Length: 224
Image 1: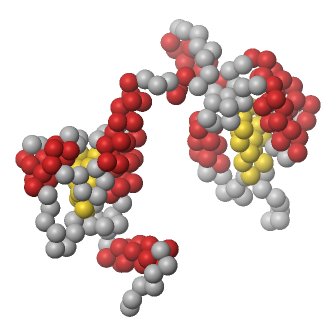
Image 2: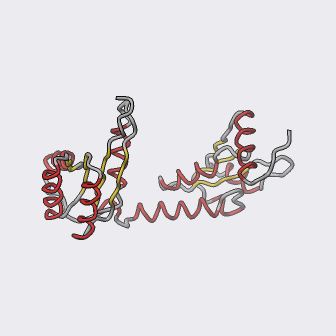
């Protein structure tokens, strides 16, 4: 069985497919087996989109996970999979059934409602804009608008952490610590105002490794 080819999994969504991808990753990670080949079809909202997705299933038969709101498209996909003798699973149906019973309401038939441009969305976008504008040394009054300040030497993952926090709706500023350079006075003003400051660290060995790889990626040969 060692030479068995990895199985195929098809993810078919009428929206971005992020939910299906997350579910598939979480599920397959629980098995000690070859990583499956994942075929993704997103924004499947027309007959031709669905025909194309079905064609890919026919070419590479395997488990089909789908989130389709349109009842005609759901029925067509399920019939096509039954004819090919491949399993088709409406990934969110069990959850929606339980939620419907618990809430005493019928689900809305709108597509992609989880991506509605609501207040929380614009808050995340504003936080992301702040993180980018405040990267590597936010100064003065801009620091005073931060909800949290990350500081540390170069290559301690301050920027990706700021971006992650922005996606959670938090305005995070990045203040690097550079030898021989004074930290802007706004940094201390922000601390005095009660804005939390978190220092990110890394072992010297890890920092050398990261910086060496970065130099090599830039075509610079590190000196011993």
